[in-house]
Structure formats: structure tokens, C-alpha cells
Image (tube, rainbow, N blue to C red; front, side, top):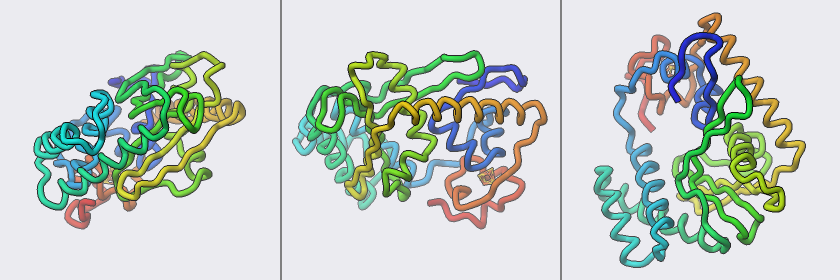
Length: 259
Ligand code: SF4
């Protein structure tokens, strides 16, 4: 997914990349154009999220019972591997058991557990999607993509989820990877581990058409930014978890408390 700096180079899009582009174009430039490796160590929140994602995936792939001893052993190993201890480790254990349980309660068949796909529908951009999990024939839809989140932020309404660029990216990628229209509609769910809550949308065709148009528009914006080399900084609360806050010319890293 590396990017060349030429204006004609293909643009790579994903939920993560789109999020960075929306939040701060300077951060996008550091990550996607200059390809600078972050020198900022991951925060405790990032480590908790990374560990929780890895543990849920391993439990689901291994068809383990979420609260059983084998699952707890998986969680403990991953928590230890991330250097989490005490309250951090306890929180991750609870989140993982709850998230895996909610996913399994949907029924159906698990698919795409932590799988990465690329969608090359145009020569303008490639869309990448790493699905946390998808469920075929579950309780909510013929095909449901579930995105796990374990941070402080979460969506609280279907409208908020529907308007997010990440939900659009997931819906487009899922429809491409599973083209069988008999497995429709496709639901997109955000499952927030810490609050044990879910928000689901079931996008219609108009949503999909609009989402493709939005992806093309963002790809065009990125190409223009490359041509003009204009990547303005947009400081905000997100600077607290920016991987480039140590080098940012507009933000004093000492003023930011890592989240
Ligand atoms: S610290 Fe903030 S303003 Fe600076 S690059 Fe990161 S997100 Fe942008």
C-alpha cells in the first residue's frame, strides 16, 4: 500500500487512511507520501485496542468459547505480549469476552476474521479493507460486517455510523468481495467493546452509489494535494494520538497528553 508522490500514482484508500485524511492532511503526508515511520511509542489506549483486536480474532478463528479457560489463556498471552498489566489487562479481558460473545450470539457462519482485501474498480484508486469479522446468515442480515472498537470514541446512532467514511469503505469492500446479490442486504455494525454496545446500519443501493462517488472525490482531492504539495495541518483533539506529534511544526508535543 505504499504511495508514490507523483500526481498520477494510484491512490490507496482504507478506513484508516480516509480517517487520517479527514483529520489532518499533514499527518496523511507524513504517513502516506513521505512514508515516515512513527517514532512515537503506542499509548496505553492503542496497546489495549491492539491486544483486544488480536485476542478476539484468535478466539473466533479458533472457535473457542469466549469465557472458557482456553479463551482466557489466549487473552492472557496476548495481554502479556502487549505489556499490559493490572487494570489495563483486566479491562482487555472483559472487552474481549464480551465482544466475542456478542458476535457469536448473531448465529450464522463466521467469515473474513481479520482478513485484508483490496478493491481495484478504477485506475484512480484502490480501496483496502481489513474486516474484523463478517457473519453470513446471522440474526441481523444475510451478510453483516462487524467492526470492533475499543477506544474512548464510539458512534452512538445509526445516522452517525452511516455518515462515517469508514462505514462507507466497509460497505463498498464487502459488496465487492461478496458480489452475490442474493446475499443482500449487507449490514455494517460497529461494536464498542468497553460499553458492550452495537450500532448497525443496513445501507441501500443509493448509499452505495453515493459512497463510490465520495471515494472518487477523495481520491481526486488527494491527487490535487500531491500536485500542489499542499497538506495543511489541522490540529485538534486527535493530535493526542497522532503518530507524528513529535515532529509536527504546529503542535508542541509537550502540550499533548497521550490518550
Ligand atoms: S500533531 Fe495534529 S496537526 Fe500535527 S500532524 Fe498530527 S494530527 Fe496534524
